[in-house]
Length: 228
Image (cartoon, rainbow, N blue to C red; front, side):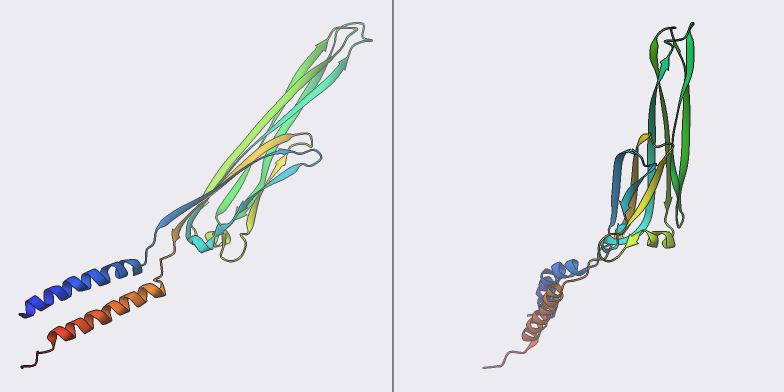
């Protein structure tokens, strides 16, 4: 048997045994995206603020490469005022007004800066005939929104939790008055690279056994036959 005839089966056998193991061992890095979208409606009652709480990035998933945060909020206020013209000798009127407002407490974390505020006041002149009792209703509405993003390493570290239960960060919305109701929403998008896949011990053992088997086969084929 010629040297080339021995080498060819050896090469084929090496490819069949080692290729799957090598492919399983090669580290892989893939991109991933995690989006957290949270919306809540608040009925303030006696309060004047409400909080949206968002989870930080789970560092066990991989390496955070960028973060984007956005928010929206809208407020609504309705006022109904009674107008009493029962004892009035002529037509009477009253000016009814409602003010509604919403703002986001300035949020600064590294290079991420979110802020915004808006308010609206609506007025209505209400007229009631003399001798009657009536009412006027006024509605006021306002909305705000904002967004920011960053890929700065120090900023990303502030939004990353590497161990234990996920920590959170808060966006605090404020209403213009105690009888205002509003809804707020916030979304955070984490873009990251998955951690490289590490070869399992069983995979490495398979590679080692394959090499040992191929070495033994090569030695047997190279051993000269004894003459009878």
